[in-house]
Structure formats: C-alpha cells, structure tokens
Image (cartoon, rainbow, N blue to C red):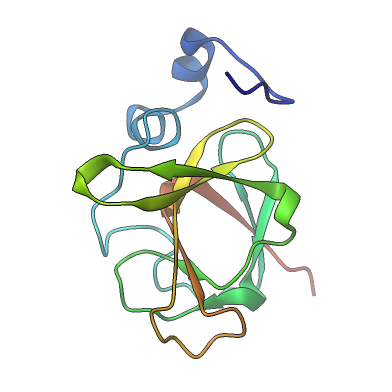
Length: 136
C-alpha cells in the first residue's frame, strides 16, 4: 500500500468531500462528460487537487480536446501526480492520481494526434480540481 503525505480515514474524507467529490476522488469514479465546471473554461490560473490543494496543472497546458472533460498536455511537475495501471472497463489505461493524497484525478492518454508538445492528454475530472485564478 502506498503512503501519502496527506492521509485521512475514510470517515474523514467523507466528512470533507461532497458525495459526488468522494465518488470521484476517493472511489475512482468519473463525472459525466460535458457537465464539469472546468470543461470549457479559459480562465488563466492553477488547478489544484480539490481534496488536498496540491497544485497540479496550469491553464497554460490546458487545451480543447472536445472529449467532454478538461484536458492538459502535462502536469506542473511530474512529482505532483502518480501513475497507476488501470485495467478496469476491459482496457488498459493509465490512471492519474494526486501524489500528495492519492485522490483519483482521471487518466492520461498518448498518441492520439493532438497538436500538443507532449502528444499526451491528461483527461481530468473537473470535480477533482479547484481553479485558483491568476492575479492581475
């Protein structure tokens, strides 16, 4: 079992998070496509883990993938996220988790042909994130 800088009991997470946030962040659920708070936002700023505040993605790496969820071509730093092999739903995917608290964020895909510097698409649930708009 992996240990994280921020560890809470299941009861503590349930108390802190809404039922919808808990289902995605702590149970690796997925919000429905096209309904997330940040799917189409263009606001400049930093996206943090909704569960612990760890800064994860910059609006500078956000792009329109038209997949129904916010997409980024890279995290702020590789040590901010953790990668887990996910074989649920009958396929092999790479799950992305917050490296600080272990919360589920979404999945990362590569080789899809998007015109991004990394050819990666971090497909992240809006409900897993909290946007801190840039000052100025």
